[in-house]
Image (cartoon, rainbow, N blue to C red):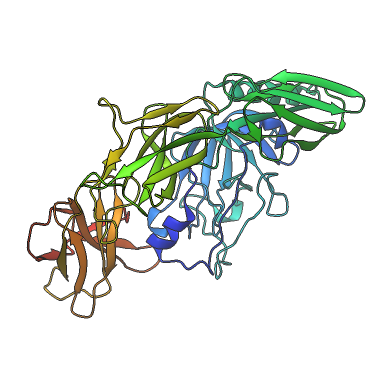
Length: 471
């Protein structure tokens, strides 16, 4: 399963925000938070799915699991379970053949996972789903619901997965005691990434019903209070110099299951410096970017912040978590006519990353912009394979790691014009969705690499290729 970005789907598939709403998930929470609501809980492997990439989120999918171990709702002789992954909704989950998962599945839309605050249905999709080939319509199988946010997750070797399976086995045996558990992460809002960075060594304090207990988080940020009597409690985290959003959580611990309190903590780290222009003078009113890096030193998806330099070329990024960062210009955004500079990193002695410990403040050496690139005119002329000019075709120009620099639709003559920058390398492609729903595919020209020189550019593109995926 993987979460999908709504904005990307809207852009690629052509859906308007009025037709589709986002599925918003917290978590994933531990197994004890889902088990009481779920109709069936089991470990299984995906044996069949009729997911069709051409449908985007307008799916009519069935998924069949081969059951390995059942914890709730299934008799010992049941060896397969059919799942609806959330067809016709923006909470649609994608399952792949061979995936081994801990599945929490539900009996209908009225009994939804605890971490699904919103489930939206695409308009005009009320017809029943057709059964997959080979399934007897007179013996329609029971189908359970397991969309995104259901609690379903791939089984790994981490401590949380092992703890979940141990808990479910005790639940099945009838000797699972109530408990409180959760996870503390570090600045989960600064980027889109998985797994989230757990925060080690946070002290959690649980109070209520005459009880006060404390426990630390482990290396992955997890904590647990075992054998807590059912009732209402408050949990508070503490680790200097971090500050938790909300600072405390009220939880209810049921007689069966658990209360869950997750926390997001931030440290007040600072990086500041000065930007110079190509002549060595201070560069005022220029957007400078900071990128958050993962453990391998690669930028985390959408983990960027931007600040414009002041009159004296100074910039300052506050509220940064611990970890490594890059500072520069056009690192996240593509160069354009307003910011006509090739991607430029801060470097010092061959090093381009800056490391902060929690709450650290660093003033780094100045770095310098290159000379602005000259603006050139680019004209794309798009044709169908039979020679006809192709109108309403999107032409995309990307830079670097697929950063969109320019785009637009061809006119009635199959032409799209836009500005590009001399000396900047672009990847340019024309593409358009074709075909009826359920049989859609992408007609595309294939990508062409282009580095503009000193004059205007004209290129002809033929929509001669076909794919199911727009990317």
